[in-house]
Length: 177
Ligand code: GDP
Image (tube, rainbow, N blue to C red):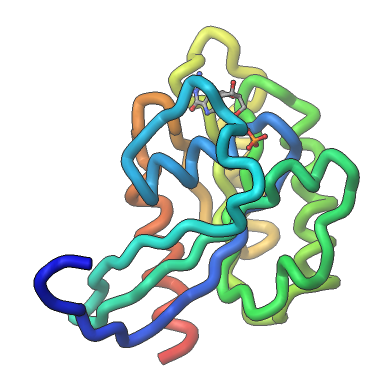
C-alpha cells in the first residue's frame, strides 16, 4: 500500500490484557486506527492490529494483540504471550475489582511471558471522573512496587493512549537495543 514501502527496523509484539470490559479493544483501536467504536466487539476474530511508528530514528512496527474476549473464559493461552516484548495491562478506574485483579495478571505474565517483557499498567476510562473508584496513588504505588510503567487513559476521548503506547514501545526499544 502507498507509494513506497518504509524500511522496518523492528517488529514488536505487544499483548493487551486485563479483565473483561475494561476497554482493551477500544484502547487498541484508538491507537491503531484512531477510532472509538460504539458498536464494540465487531472486531471479534481479529487477532492483532499494527501501527508503524518512528522512535529514535528507528521504524518500529507494533503488532498489538487483543484477547478477543478469551479472558472471560480464562482461556488466554501461552501462545498469546509467546514472543511478546510488551504488555498493556488494563484496568477500569471505575471498577475496583478490575484493579484488584491486576496482581493476578502480573503473575500470569511472569509465568507465561518472557522475563524481560515490559509492562505498562493502564487505568482506563479516566473520562468517567465522577465514577472513579481507584485512586491514582494506589496504582502508582503498585506500579513502583512491581517495576511497571503506569498511565491513566481514556480510549473514549483518546487522552494519553498514544503516549502510553509510545512510552511502552520506547521502553521495549531500550531493552532490545
Ligand atoms: P474489553 O472487553 O476490555 O475489550 O472492553 P471494550 O473495549 O469492549 O470496552 C468495554 C466497554 O467500555 C464498551 O462499552 C466501551 O464502549 C466502554 N469503554 C471503553 N473504553 C472507554 C473509555 O475510555 N471511557 C468510557 N467512558 N468508556 C469506555
